[in-house]
Length: 97
Image 1 (cartoon, rainbow, N blue to C red):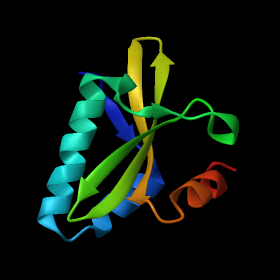
Image 2: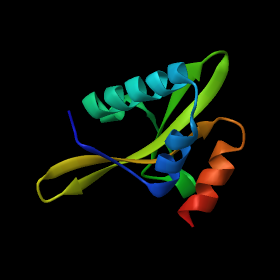
Image 3: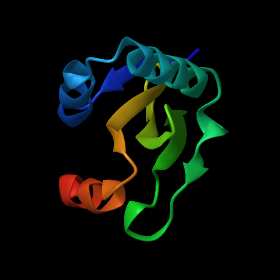
């Protein structure tokens, strides 16, 4: 499994989650990303180089945006942002600017 680091936006979002089931669902999604970084959908255009993974919980669609970066000692997964699908990509573009 690849090591993982979280951006400040992702850390803030994960800290705000109170629902234990949702936290567990996100944790499982991050583990599956660490095992297979190509599991998410590759984005193009303004979001080129990013991957997004759909996470479903309690009839709600969530997204996890991440990037695989190459360092001297190997690859690392950077979780950039997470949140509900509503306005997710608009917020992600604004965050990346």
